[in-house]
Amino acid sequence: MAVDNYIPPVGPCTEVRHERACIKVQKVYDGRRTRICEIRQFDATPPVPVGVGPYIVASCEIVPNSDRVISTSIVPIPGTMPPLAEVTATVACDAEFRVIDASGIEYTFTREVAFTVTVILYTPDPFMLVQAEIQCFCLDACLEPFETDTDVVVSCYFGAFIQIKVHAEAELCIKEYGECQWPEITTQSPNPCIEFLDPEVTPFPPFNLPQLQFPTDA
Image 1 (spheres, rainbow, N blue to C red):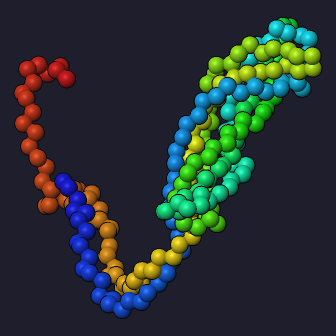
Image 2: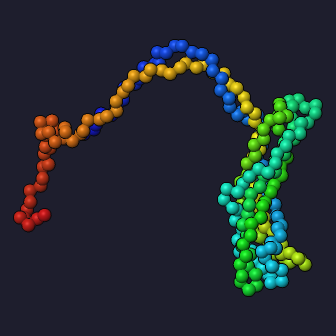
Image 3: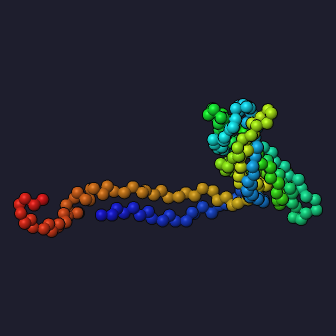
């Protein structure tokens, strides 16, 4: 037996008074997305010592939540209409490397992986804010480390998805209607067991059980 949970519709708001209200929001004017894939070299000394090779890169992983913006800049392009600018952002993440030497000793170190991107964006105000985001990936395609006189050098391929936006604080004017005095409603349903257990309301249904052929049938 179904329980009626229907909620009747609420009528329109009867409040008609309205005023102007202004709210401040971040308005994005332009943006670009780009992807980069490059091989990067890193000095692994220290902690990896020189003279105990050959070495192998056991793993390369991006440190979680290490993405960050290092710097941004806006350089307007004179004479452009609409006004354009060269927007530059340097973003980075951290990569953790595990290197193993010829004796099987493992070394772990972390290095910054930075990318600098310049795009041309619509910038009506040269003092707009720049928002940059990066998702960085180590592609697990590392070359065999090599030694110099003083260093062990690790080379790995990195890919990055980068998004750059220019935005400014803008004011939006809207109509403010105040708070409506909505009627109070109830969604509480009656206990369905009250009706189910009442034989006057819910009679016991016939089952039409088959006749047992033998007393021992179960």
